[in-house]
Length: 293
Length: 238
Ligand SMILES: Nc1ncnc2c1ncn2[C@@H]1O[C@H](COP(=O)(O)OP(=O)(O)OP(=O)(O)O)[C@@H](O)[C@H]1O
Ligand SMILES: [Mg+2]
Image 1 (spheres, rainbow over the protein chains, first blue to last red):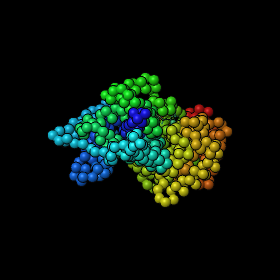
Image 2: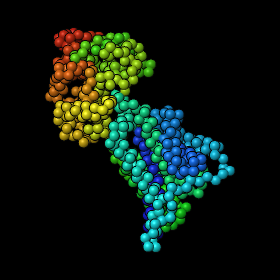
Image 3: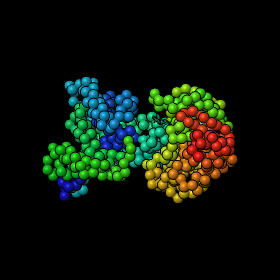
Image 4: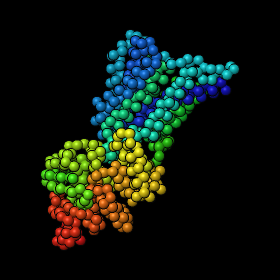
């Protein structure tokens, strides 16, 4: 029982982090049909920005804020420099561009931040679990992770579904030509999407890096694969799908690695990804209707 | 209200429109006729800015708008309903309609748009019944209504319509033409109407323009065009 609670809490917490990375991928995919694999490195860069700010100011929260803002700025930067051209390419080409950019940014981070120093990002709150009697339940950090991701998803969802800006963003994503005829500034709306994706990626980085031993440029590569898996499971096109996919992956991986081998995590993730792609290429949550790219 | 001079446009190296010159008076309906591939859609695209002209000038309400980006034209009172309507399939009827008013800014924007939407729903009760349907759940005719309704939510001064009667039942086409006539009278709307339905279009129009191979080959009062047997045989096929 104790182990079951532990693995469940762990799975939900990790799942929330996967969901955050999945959101970063889904927001871009639905508006531009680009699979932005560079997001892993962009998020790592956000984490380095956070580390630098925390190093100077001593405040974790200023670091977190810097990661989110930095993620947004990086997202727009990456779009304006690289993906503006790649947006009109077939998805396969832009995916390759994304992988190239991933490697490039990680190399740049490696040069900027020499390996002579061990860098870490601490957790926002204690990771010591509250107990019910002798049974450990959740830690403050777990609650923070789940709360932060929930807040992000709900805010994003409301923004897209309920506001005029959200309607403009959706119109720009679904039908840029028509949107322009309606007076929508399409490039601006797409940039806003890249910025929001950058925020989601930056948040994922700040929640995930404390679980890693050290901040290195490639620290989020595994999370990128897991976020991608979650996004695919969720159908790539929907925010709700990304969250459900994230939680499903988190739980599945937590149980399998928990009850067997911890280092089975990534292999199991790949198995899940391949399984979903074979069984239901359009994802579990996407509507079956196809859309012309 | 709309002056077109020396207008040329095309796709890549391929010129389609040659030296078009037209002068459209306010509160009139102009029917644009011509065979398939004559350049009617291309002309509308050049006027709305979707396809920037290679040469020539478009003046709207005294302002040279030739180089004004598409997204800045709706706020000047120019709305283009493209071929097929351009209803966004992933959005609901309500959202598509709201989109028509999104160009408005300022404190009263939301209220004005809501009033305009209510008017459109009075005009097309069918859309009111399907207000929460998604674009892809509508019939072809309902989609055409939504496309026109969405353009009306913008309360344009000049409406560019590309084959709005496509896929509509004859009785609905008659209603559509009557509606355009009403809007001209009640709101002073100016309409530039591309149509294959020559009879219905000339029936409601004040003026007619016949395009052939990208050039204006005839223009004049709609009645005269309708009566010109030689012209009808040569270009309009009846
Ligand atoms: N996107 C495009 N790229 C290249 N050529 C095009 C394009 N669209 C149209 N054309 C060409 O331009 C010419 C005029 O086309 P246009 O669509 O303006 O005709 P139309 O009068 O609207 O015809 P229809 O009645 O069939 O709608 C045609 O010869 C067509 O082949
Ligand atoms: Mg046409």
